Length: 165
Image (tube, rainbow, N blue to C red; front, side, top):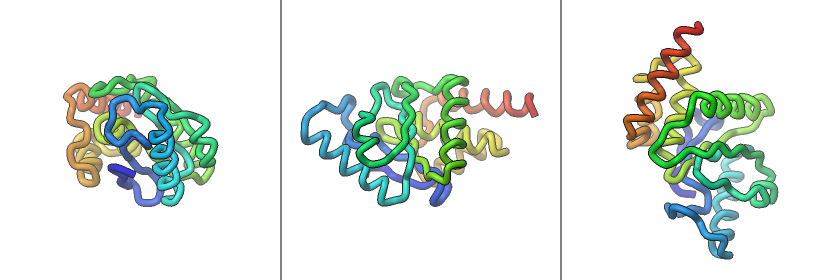
Protein backbone atom coordinates (compact mmCIF):
# COMPACT_ATOMS: atom_id res chain seq x y z
CA UNK A 1 0.00 0.00 0.00
CA UNK A 2 1.74 3.14 -1.22
CA UNK A 3 1.82 6.36 0.73
CA UNK A 4 -0.23 5.19 3.73
CA UNK A 5 -0.16 7.44 6.80
CA UNK A 6 -2.32 8.03 9.85
CA UNK A 7 -3.48 11.59 10.45
CA UNK A 8 -5.20 10.50 13.66
CA UNK A 9 -3.64 7.23 14.75
CA UNK A 10 -6.05 4.34 14.40
CA UNK A 11 -8.90 6.61 13.27
CA UNK A 12 -8.28 8.59 10.06
CA UNK A 13 -5.68 7.92 7.38
CA UNK A 14 -4.54 9.10 3.97
CA UNK A 15 -3.04 7.06 1.16
CA UNK A 16 -2.40 6.76 -2.56
CA UNK A 17 -5.07 5.22 -4.80
CA UNK A 18 -5.37 1.52 -3.95
CA UNK A 19 -4.18 -0.54 -6.91
CA UNK A 20 -3.01 2.57 -8.73
CA UNK A 21 0.73 2.31 -8.24
CA UNK A 22 0.92 5.96 -9.28
CA UNK A 23 -0.72 5.38 -12.68
CA UNK A 24 -3.13 8.06 -13.85
CA UNK A 25 -5.94 5.72 -14.86
CA UNK A 26 -5.61 2.11 -13.73
CA UNK A 27 -6.57 -0.32 -16.46
CA UNK A 28 -9.03 -3.13 -15.97
CA UNK A 29 -6.27 -5.72 -16.39
CA UNK A 30 -6.02 -8.73 -14.12
CA UNK A 31 -2.70 -7.43 -12.76
CA UNK A 32 -4.32 -4.14 -11.75
CA UNK A 33 -7.26 -5.98 -10.15
CA UNK A 34 -4.76 -8.09 -8.21
CA UNK A 35 -2.91 -4.94 -7.11
CA UNK A 36 -6.20 -3.36 -6.05
CA UNK A 37 -7.10 -6.44 -4.01
CA UNK A 38 -3.65 -6.49 -2.40
CA UNK A 39 -3.91 -2.83 -1.42
CA UNK A 40 -7.45 -3.19 -0.09
CA UNK A 41 -6.29 -6.19 1.95
CA UNK A 42 -3.45 -4.04 3.33
CA UNK A 43 -6.01 -1.41 4.35
CA UNK A 44 -8.15 -4.08 6.00
CA UNK A 45 -5.11 -5.35 7.89
CA UNK A 46 -4.68 -1.82 9.29
CA UNK A 47 -8.27 -1.95 10.49
CA UNK A 48 -9.70 0.34 7.80
CA UNK A 49 -13.43 -0.17 7.33
CA UNK A 50 -14.29 2.65 4.90
CA UNK A 51 -12.61 4.33 1.93
CA UNK A 52 -13.25 7.86 0.66
CA UNK A 53 -12.10 8.18 -2.95
CA UNK A 54 -11.27 11.60 -4.42
CA UNK A 55 -9.91 10.47 -7.81
CA UNK A 56 -11.58 11.22 -11.10
CA UNK A 57 -12.61 7.58 -11.51
CA UNK A 58 -13.99 5.45 -8.66
CA UNK A 59 -12.66 2.24 -7.22
CA UNK A 60 -14.83 -0.70 -8.23
CA UNK A 61 -17.53 -1.36 -5.68
CA UNK A 62 -17.07 -5.06 -6.33
CA UNK A 63 -13.54 -4.81 -4.95
CA UNK A 64 -14.69 -2.80 -1.94
CA UNK A 65 -17.49 -5.31 -1.33
CA UNK A 66 -15.09 -8.27 -1.58
CA UNK A 67 -13.13 -6.75 1.27
CA UNK A 68 -16.11 -5.66 3.34
CA UNK A 69 -15.27 -1.98 2.93
CA UNK A 70 -17.79 0.84 2.71
CA UNK A 71 -16.96 3.53 0.19
CA UNK A 72 -17.84 6.96 -1.15
CA UNK A 73 -16.55 8.46 -4.39
CA UNK A 74 -16.35 12.25 -4.70
CA UNK A 75 -14.61 12.99 -8.02
CA UNK A 76 -12.13 15.87 -7.85
CA UNK A 77 -9.75 16.67 -10.71
CA UNK A 78 -6.04 16.25 -9.95
CA UNK A 79 -4.41 19.37 -8.45
CA UNK A 80 -7.84 20.89 -7.82
CA UNK A 81 -9.66 21.43 -4.55
CA UNK A 82 -12.88 19.77 -3.47
CA UNK A 83 -15.86 22.13 -3.65
CA UNK A 84 -17.46 23.29 -0.39
CA UNK A 85 -20.26 20.76 -1.00
CA UNK A 86 -17.73 17.98 -1.55
CA UNK A 87 -15.92 18.94 1.66
CA UNK A 88 -19.23 18.82 3.52
CA UNK A 89 -20.06 15.42 2.01
CA UNK A 90 -16.57 14.07 2.75
CA UNK A 91 -16.70 15.14 6.40
CA UNK A 92 -20.24 13.78 6.78
CA UNK A 93 -19.04 10.41 5.39
CA UNK A 94 -16.10 10.35 7.80
CA UNK A 95 -18.39 11.22 10.71
CA UNK A 96 -20.89 8.48 9.76
CA UNK A 97 -18.15 5.90 9.49
CA UNK A 98 -16.57 6.92 12.77
CA UNK A 99 -20.02 6.74 14.38
CA UNK A 100 -20.16 3.12 13.22
CA UNK A 101 -16.74 2.50 14.76
CA UNK A 102 -14.95 2.27 11.41
CA UNK A 103 -11.49 3.58 10.63
CA UNK A 104 -11.44 5.67 7.45
CA UNK A 105 -8.84 5.99 4.69
CA UNK A 106 -9.03 8.95 2.29
CA UNK A 107 -7.23 8.65 -1.04
CA UNK A 108 -6.50 10.48 -4.25
CA UNK A 109 -3.85 9.51 -6.81
CA UNK A 110 -0.78 9.87 -4.57
CA UNK A 111 -2.49 10.73 -1.28
CA UNK A 112 -1.24 14.29 -0.92
CA UNK A 113 -3.20 17.07 -2.62
CA UNK A 114 -6.90 16.27 -2.61
CA UNK A 115 -6.47 13.83 0.28
CA UNK A 116 -4.53 16.36 2.35
CA UNK A 117 -7.17 19.00 1.64
CA UNK A 118 -9.97 16.82 3.06
CA UNK A 119 -7.85 15.77 6.05
CA UNK A 120 -6.96 19.40 6.82
CA UNK A 121 -10.64 20.39 6.52
CA UNK A 122 -11.43 17.70 9.09
CA UNK A 123 -8.95 19.31 11.49
CA UNK A 124 -10.25 22.81 10.73
CA UNK A 125 -13.77 21.72 11.50
CA UNK A 126 -12.40 20.38 14.78
CA UNK A 127 -11.13 23.83 15.75
CA UNK A 128 -7.71 24.36 14.15
CA UNK A 129 -7.05 27.31 11.90
CA UNK A 130 -6.02 26.59 8.31
CA UNK A 131 -2.28 27.11 8.94
CA UNK A 132 -2.23 24.80 11.95
CA UNK A 133 -4.25 22.16 10.10
CA UNK A 134 -1.81 22.27 7.17
CA UNK A 135 1.14 21.89 9.55
CA UNK A 136 -0.50 18.84 11.16
CA UNK A 137 -1.18 17.19 7.81
CA UNK A 138 2.28 18.01 6.43
CA UNK A 139 3.90 16.61 9.58
CA UNK A 140 2.62 13.14 8.61
CA UNK A 141 2.60 13.67 4.83
CA UNK A 142 5.32 16.03 3.59
CA UNK A 143 4.25 17.64 0.33
CA UNK A 144 0.55 17.54 1.16
CA UNK A 145 -1.72 20.29 -0.19
CA UNK A 146 0.79 21.74 -2.63
CA UNK A 147 -1.63 23.50 -4.99
CA UNK A 148 -2.54 27.12 -4.28
CA UNK A 149 -6.21 26.38 -5.08
CA UNK A 150 -6.26 23.73 -2.35
CA UNK A 151 -4.74 26.11 0.21
CA UNK A 152 -7.30 28.79 -0.73
CA UNK A 153 -10.13 26.28 -0.34
CA UNK A 154 -8.93 25.53 3.20
CA UNK A 155 -8.66 29.22 4.07
CA UNK A 156 -12.21 29.73 2.76
CA UNK A 157 -13.43 26.68 4.67
CA UNK A 158 -11.88 28.02 7.90
CA UNK A 159 -13.36 31.48 7.31
CA UNK A 160 -16.82 29.99 6.74
CA UNK A 161 -16.50 27.91 9.90
CA UNK A 162 -15.47 30.99 11.89
CA UNK A 163 -18.44 32.93 10.52
CA UNK A 164 -20.90 30.18 11.45
CA UNK A 165 -19.48 29.72 14.95
